[in-house]
Image (tube, rainbow, N blue to C red):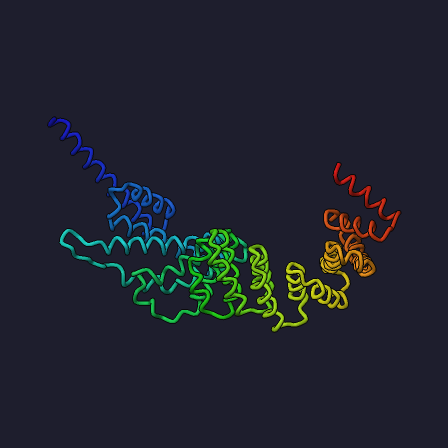
Length: 399
């Protein structure tokens, strides 16, 4: 037993000696500005051991190793000696994270409950001079469309305000704070990450020029999360502030049509038309709602208005054609009307004909929508050759 304890004691002393030697070598490399990456890796290796997680000296050496790399790179960039710009910004971020970790360890009370912040003041003063490089790095990676690294840089920039290390500077006016928040929202959206998109969204909303896009990205994030309530709520916020925005309008139309809340859809369409009464999207959306609620005359009137201005809108032809067909079918269902209004019924079929044929011309592959309608029209109007042609098309579709 004594031999075992002696062995363990020797092993422990050997481990402590090896650790001290490793720290000493790292600090020597930092001083001589050599093997800096090795010095950093060595300290990270020591911190991988949970027994070292409260060792301030290791954290300090790690931070100084990364700082030395940053200063070396900064000097090369300044002298235009050709340094990897991406590596420079990555090093800047690692430096901030290393010093923040050091500060968090310094904040831990000792055995007597005392907290001694030996390094905070000078470290904060040093880092605050270079904090903007986190933002600059984010912009650099943004131009490269590297959204993962852009988010990381901007996130670290934003997080500085939360860090106790920068408490003395957190109240300073920062013109980049809201833009940085917006770019995290943007990158989160690009990465299909709802949590990243929403993390700083409330801050991004503080500046008017970012609000429309922030609300759009937020709505997508809530949709990814399956939070329908917040999704619709955010779309309404966006629409209320941007009546002419297609993004918010189209998605609100899709939602309320899908849940069959056509009264709400109609009120939104009318509100949008107040801001732009000639907007083709808003008019078409209203024509769709009118078609769905059975106001066929209203749908036809709007469709004709749209086609008078632009005769290349396939779905508008379809809406008008379907409306005339529905008017004919409504009279046919009424036995009395079928006998007394035959002329009127055939008139509706004749009016539906050019719209449906035009839709076929515009969308030849969409047989499911135009073939059955044209079959019915050709049958009722006794159009023999065309009826035979459309019958063949339908037969082949069923095969």
